[in-house]
Length: 249
Image (cartoon, rainbow, N blue to C red; front, side):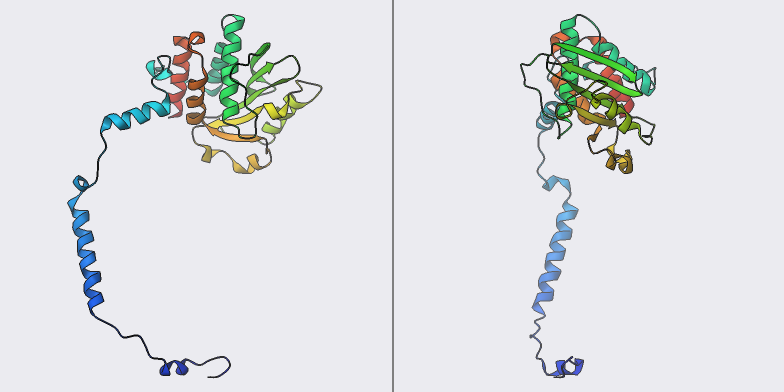
């Protein structure tokens, strides 16, 4: 054989014996597969709907009496993004100081759970003071907690139809982390862009803001429902959350 080889050298190679029986095996298996497909769904094990319904209820937390799905959305209204974000801030600031702390705490807990880089809050911890504002430095929702030593919280850019703009996230982040402004503890804070579909969020801009995380309204609202304490909820607040579900999906 030449150093580089020549196809004619293969003439001396003996091929493995071929047995036509294997064609029959392939043909038979093909016929069996076609027959199985034609037999349809009756041959596929079906689980009782009650079991599937239980799994869905567990996923959404529907067993809670205070779940927003128990309320009807504002079907006659198609709220704009600022109306939704100001609606959340309105309810976070409503009621007694105890109710405000509870609602803000649940909101921040939900956001931290959606941000893998953030430290979670212990279950029994209660903030000394809270603050919830909309449209501060063009930030859609800003919720701040204070423990007496430091301040931290969540910054949310809420999206439904509009896109992110250049430098928007960097300005918001600088506002809360700057020592001359709110001076948040970044390790205990979350920076979220929430949209119906995270695949529609501009990845080019997200790459320039590594502290930020894209989150779907689906993921955030499910977590928020789990965190809200029922005694500090109300029908109007539930209806707002239900309307956000309706607008997003």
